[in-house]
Length: 345
Ligand code: AMP
Ligand code: TRP
Image (cartoon, rainbow, N blue to C red; front, side, top):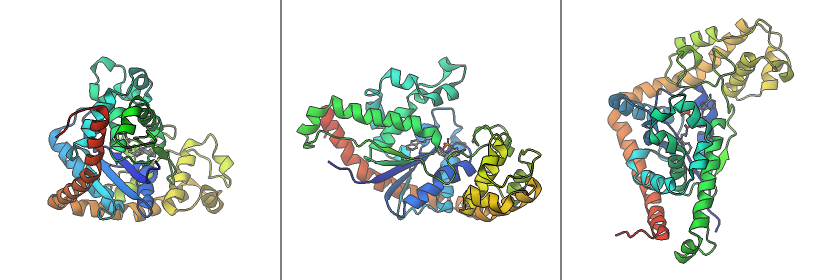
């Protein structure tokens, strides 16, 4: 059977979202909602794989939701909700804990990075995180998953899980009426945002990240205009003027990053930006970049702040999204149980 195209993606409600999330993921999500059925999730169950302060977690779930919508996700057109409201995620996550192999998870580089040296003390949830992510996607039989580069390995694992489930249960899948024996699709990563890897403003070799201890390393989607301009002013650069050709950005990671950000924000390309700014000093270029960034990002911050004044409205959007998500996932879960041989009422 051919599966209908359906998009699923999510972000964790930990800290505030930043320019990397925006250029690497959200812009792509907004594009896709024009042509596809899209499901966008605030993955709160993923967030608690590391300790979260309860009051701060609730606030962050609402803030990420408000940021999604302020940036341009349309909760009428797409489904926007938080993961823990739809039980299919946790249920299918458990089933996938029984499908995925220890050897597969042992290869996950993100676990190694996040667990660090004290691996014995990491939560079991952090280790099983990619199985829950596979469940997020496959509970809807989603076919397309827009993410940044760093999630590629987890997507591969989701494909392996889908394939193993299809193989392990082939006869049973046919018995429930799927004649080709294919129960889950193999979800494809969509890694084509305008900037799939935005780097830190303090170190062009490190990814811009929520977890960087220096707030100057990233532009948060909640930063006001002055803060955005100041962070760009302070961004690390080298002493040379900008080159006129992309080849001149080699071995200049900070320059490469700032030019890439400019091109993505302006909806232009790196060669075009360099054609305009080649030979310019960073002081000039940073001013232009700050203007672009403020113009693009400060309306998002303003709207997010406005929405955060009305938490009931955000909760209503999440409840509505969760009901629509359940309407898709629950029948699929019922079928999963039939395939496995679990009795349901
Ligand atoms: P995270 O912030 O790690 O929860 O990631 C949420 C989404 O944003 C994922 O799809 C990431 O791949 C993407 N993302 C995070 N940081 C960056 C970055 N620096 N550049 C591009 N995409 C990113
Ligand atoms: N692991 C993803 C991240 O850290 C978040 C995520 C959870 C996700 N479930 C997902 C992304 C399902 C895409 C699809 O960015």
